[in-house]
Length: 415
Image (cartoon, rainbow, N blue to C red; front, side, top):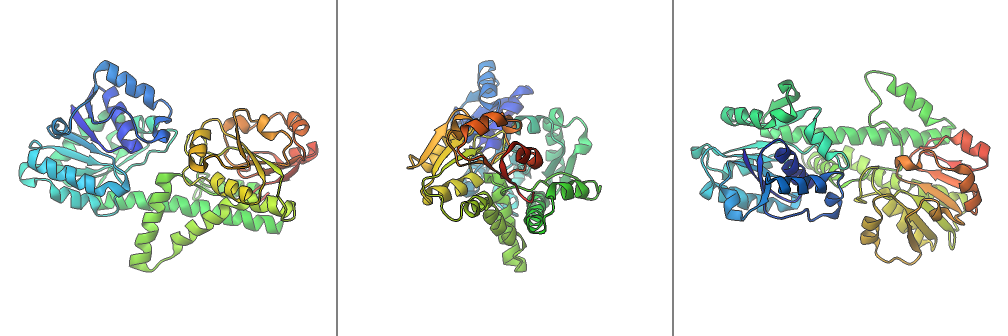
């Protein structure tokens, strides 16, 4: 099948390489992702190069792309005007019976509006396939999805889409068919539910701090109930990420406008406050005086497996520390370039390629991203390197009793 890709979101590039891998011919209008975080997606650039070498992926002009019978749209939420322009061009210059797959987050009802711009008299149809990809795992999730939510209201387009997606969903019951608007709403609802779970467990963790209760024990008790389970039930110093936050903010706006509900806005506001938790614990420990202190930070990416610092807790913590004239020493295996791009040449900020050099003469170590390489560090080496054996664990990665036994002062989240 011949498929033209529109847009520069991660979903566009993942779709390009995975569709090419299964034998389709893919048309691109630019050679590489514009976003550095997309280029850092594990396996993406190698897969893109392999697709171009095989000839299954190639560059083309705008006019040539319009002639394809299949189109995949994954644009930034702010680029809906470009999406509308593409739909108008397809209506006027595209072939009969074309199918446009919209994976963009333009809000609930946007897919219907884009579909209306196509030429239905020539059986041009738009289907909505909400973006469920997570950075760091995007290729694997596209290739082996747990489920697919598809908004499709055209029987002919549905049959064709089943054929296109069969390599990624050989068991067709994995595909949940619904209207375009319902598919968009489902994605917003999923993101909102996950945010509520994260917000709730963080509230419990903060309460556990005051009640002298170990939230990890409570979390295990909660997750043993099959109605609750263990997913998205780990307390920490807040969530980040570009797409996840976008969907939550979008649904929060809809709730506020149509229901006068502040539920998700409260979650978002509390999440921003939660990002400052490691700083507040450090601030309290040093009695409001951090000037000149060396603070080591392990992890600045918004989650493990990505090179992005979009909405990451580390940004708020580092900025707060620099504002107090602390010396901040940061290590991250993937996201240092993104951090430097975000913060520039900040006075008092140094970036380290080795996690242990970042802790030299440190008055505290803050763990902000739970990268696997931090899971079992050389504690004796840390004791030798650090000026003060103080650990603020923003992800509850370490075992508190063991660290205290070794001589560390330990602060966790609800522990």
